[in-house]
Amino acid sequence: MIRLGVNVDHVATIRQARGGIEPDPVTAAALSELGGADGITIHLREDRRHIQDRDVRLLRETVQTRLNLEMACEQSIIDIANEVKPEQVTLVPERREEITTEGGLNVLAEASKVEDAVRQLHDAGLPVSLFIDSTPEQIKAAADTGADFIELHTGVYAEARDGAQLQCFEELKKGALTANELGLGVNAGHGLNYVNTGLVCTLPHLDELNIGHSIVSRAVFVGLERAVREMKDLMGQG
Ligand code: PXP
Image 1: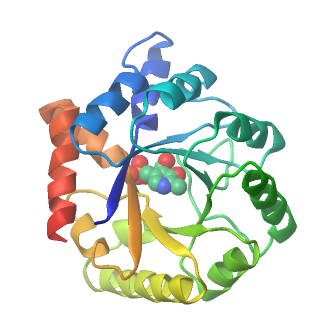
Image 2: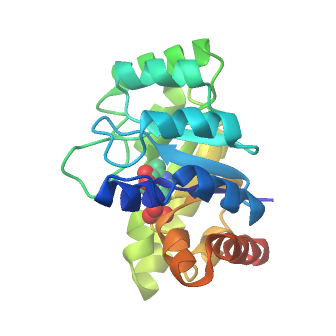
């Protein structure tokens, strides 16, 4: 069974637009679990543009499945992860001006920084995943850091159409096979929706998908519990 991690950052983004208390990502996490989510994913950004420290604290107490904390390789956030102890940490690149995480982590270029973060998180007993593009170089570099998982960046696949999308899928497939050969677990995510997720579910060795925007968007019309259930059903048929 491929696990579904529901990314509730997008609920926090709506809350922060007004700076108030609603909608609450903690409630969203509980409803996602009722809909069948296997985990809750949140990104604690340095600028705290959506998820707040209070959310991390409360979600640590209330999430009954698995908490996956996405974060940059920054010491202040590593310290929070080590204290909160999520079930998984996913290291992602972070630029202040981006709308969402844009490219994968450049593990090749930042090997020692990533390696140091992985070591600190492992010392705290936390499994680590690296969000990277599906290239052999990045996957080998990820394995060299001692990370446990990679999360294949599916953003380019998600935006491509027809033949180009199939070509992107082939790259993801090669990446999943290489990662498995190197002893890495395989997660994937970014830009996945109710149309393009089915094919991704046929990737070899896939452990987990992290999906946010499309589920929260559908939830506006059908409710969150149902939106999560529909994604789970679709993944079951993949
Ligand atoms: N995985 C990672 C590493 C991400 O940064 C994001 C976006 O926060 C997602 C998955 C989910 O992407 P989307 O919101 O496009 O489904």
